[in-house]
Length: 510
Image (cartoon, rainbow, N blue to C red; front, side):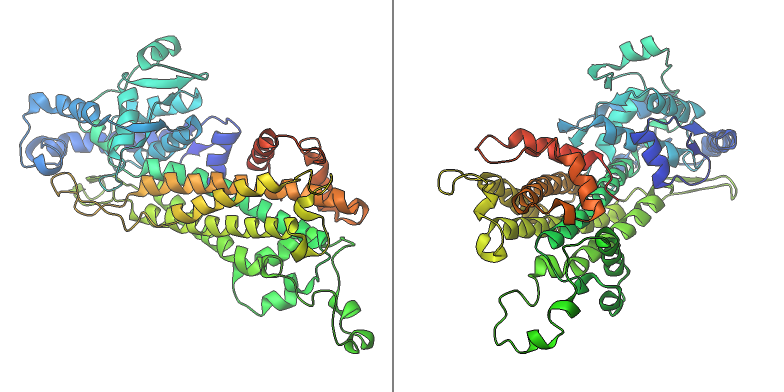
């Protein structure tokens, strides 16, 4: 049972999001939260504290009288619940809620204990607020997305519960949940922060890691199918470059192919006198780049993923609020910890490398389908009558168009700041936009690999090479064969592609 005690890990997120583990808040954390709340309540009595006794943003110059302070917080929440577009998937909202709960549990926001207690209840009961993808610009935090979270916490708005979209008040009544207490700055503390972009980003990392592993699998299986030489993923060659990611990918390929009877040793085929006497070599001396340069192409994806995970976990375990309450030094600091540039940049970097991964998959698919390149397989892996039947020709168009969309989406959001809020927010991160677009590129890449996997299974059927395949390839084929039929007589493939995509997305390969 993950516990909000020290720092949340990726494993904690995975347990709650994918294994439905419950989350708890350690008693000492509740004590810390209470101490910060009590300090702020006393500290603000005779001082000007932003968002406690002032207006917000460009209206911070206006003093708010004590009798109106609670109305101030409620007005902020209700006015900013103005999102639009598609509702965020409940899984991504749950990740957002975990991120916000952890930030508020650091005791640097001055919120009432009821905030973390109700958040914990919602997470454990799988009650997820209706939050829209469009809204926040990621500078004063994910204001609009988090306003929709805050709206639910005060008992208003809508939630998704047991697969249905319902009124919050009804669900709270059924589950005997009391709304949070608005005391000092609960509205602002809930809304000032990077939890939407970070929650989406955490899931992006989890799915991107799974996607990368499937790309390594496809690349390894493809090397088997075409009887590639094995030195391009050797330890010796890849140790000649110092990049950890490249070496890690090569090691994964070696482990996958260690008992394959299809990959070839260059010494046996080209490093001998008979080969040396030839003036023309029928077989390729070196493979195309999409086979030979896999460690060099996927290595940067591996390294980028590791760095993105590190930055996101630093963010999720940080106080990304404003102002920051410092009980130990008896001070309240005003600044910009809610700014999302760290996350925005990582989401842009991640979507760029995922786009490159989808480009690699599309080129590998093309190699399998183009008989003039592989000199081994029928055009479009057609097991029917050439000219009459079409094999996987139609599915290739889908992979190409999806890859092209990724290439456009890979343009960075990080540099697309638009000043707003009467120019108070004059440079913003667009972090949630970046995270959502990154999410789309990952979904698209799974679609491309689904078509590639379709082609790999079909190619192996063409070659009748099952017994020579590595143990790893055979094991995965056994899982996929019930999903992927032999494509001989033409039939619609859209359901098969969707089913393969869901299999890849929801299963680990390494």
